[in-house]
Image (cartoon, rainbow, N blue to C red; front, side, top):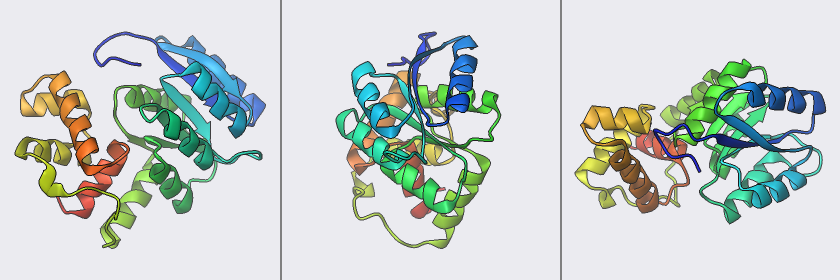
Length: 221
């Protein structure tokens, strides 16, 4: 797995049923420094099997596939490998897809028409523990949060967090990465990473996106 602040190669598995798109993306990423495409799958079922066999750092998966949809694949992978980072990719960035992908545990959401440079940037962000949303996805998520008063029944109690963890949670909700949180609070990157892990564990949340949602719903930002 990627260690923050190192040049270790990011190992990527691509799950995508459109052959030309998948192969083209694999070729592009393979030519970029810091990436290694360790596998390709043309369907969700194969993708789940390869993810559990190859243990990549990042899984980049389409959401619309004929045999096993991406949402189900995300849940199946994370049930076995909860630390794995998954980036969702789809043609139609509608609200239901975005919500379903993030609730399933994806740490990033991109539209297929995103520039390839943006896809690479999202994978790098995911590898360092950060969340990434396309502009359309961010608009959808924030719009729903601002207008909804519904609380997550599965999340833990905010009172479990220390004062420092509350500060970190606010910065997560503002979209800061671990290195930026460290700089803002004058702490080391490893300490910031530990705080993030502690927050997710105490609040019983799967990833930073859900932590940001939690914070926004509670008017912490």
